[in-house]
Length: 361
Length: 278
Image 1: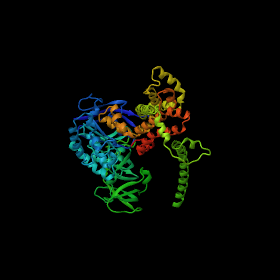
Image 2 (image 1 turned 180 degrees about the horizontal axis):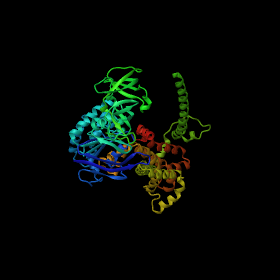
Image 3 (image 1 turned 90 degrees about the horizontal axis):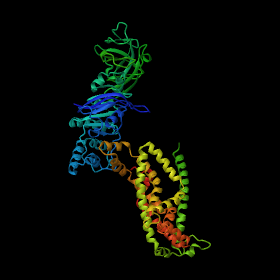
Image 4 (image 1 turned 60 degrees about the horizontal axis):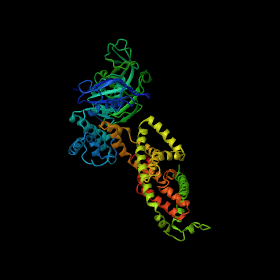
């Protein structure tokens, strides 16, 4: 069942930003994450869906039937704002009760539903306190409970976890995912944090400069990025990119003069951009793996592995290959200044058109 | 840098600040002291030559005499009434104006232009036409001083609006948007979200408007020639040479303002400094 359909939505600002001809379908009960750098239009898109801003072109439709339109969107939608936007003069209880008081529910019913929803959002005590007297996590839960209490069809969240510290953010993230599963509501969350996006989403829409670059499951986004931008934006440490040439016999690639045996797609142009995730580049040899030689510049210990950064060691490497530093993950400590051979499976390479930035298969 | 160097400079500034503060406080306190001295001593002491600073004979006779004035009770009631009615009206209208100014660019420009215009206009220049107009519709010199309350309200609106503007501007737009998405109408958002949030500034605006009316002399003199409020009453007192009782009355007139400022001191200070957003 469809919860929301956006087509050719446009809203531009004189100062820049906004969205251009964005189309999107969201299924009921889906958790969609809008991911992108600041200024990519993700918050604009969310505000348009909420009805807080008016599109200059395009349509937004709610529910299955088309034409239900924007007019009655308010009752179907709830939103959690980036700064939470709690009512500072009301207690936590009154904050959550506010939407119910507006629909003139009986006081006993309001009391029951507020307490139920608060418990569901993980808020048991402190309902009588004002937002200023609550901790960051509690404020977050009050805002979430206020959004849930009317039982809306769609819950919009704008960078809603950004105000929390890292540890709390992780635990609230887990709760949020569980909550969404339990309530079976449609969630649309805006974030610039790709880890949050991959962790929460059923589908991720990666946005850039007012457009959707790619929309798909977290696995698709991570494993098969459709554009160089998506490939570089998602994943930490970020993907390595090389300028490469297709070998004359089309039986492999040349990166900085080194031939890599790899399957070359039929339609590939002579020059390509090649991406390789640091996690796919290891210091240990493996059967069937290709290799490059790295002159190590820096080593960081990250707990699970060592993050190694270096430049191509062999002649024709480094600057000519269109990358500054190449990042690899090592299982043992190596020292800056040393040269190491790094191994990868050619199948793990992502090829992109250097002009359009689109994936080549 | 040596830690002492900074502290030393800070100390110098602190002393300069304290000295300036002392001058300002003296300028405010010395006239008050002289007024209190005049009110509490017989008139002979007030006009003694050479004058002396400390009172020699304390008496409450001046206060006693003030309370024998037949007009006094009516004037107090009238001043209070005019003050409350005009301050409520000005705060209510000022709040609506300030809200519009805080939320819409066009209203902000028009509002500031109008408010500065009203403030730059010498009030007494319009006093005579205003008195004539109110007289024509039978609102001049009525026992309830409704005409004067209307004028005071108009005078006080800029004060109220400027006091409230910063407070409304400090309410985050997202809070209003949240209330709107929760299903509240625009009027409802204003009444149940914005007004309670800026209540400190509302109190500050009300008090400033009240004091403005309580002290206002020119319009009161022109409009309420027989049904007087306190400032004209005080004026007539002084004019007829009753310096002692007039001083006592002047001192008494400060009582309501002082009560309010003491009672609401911390709230009011916060509201005036921060715009009352918390």
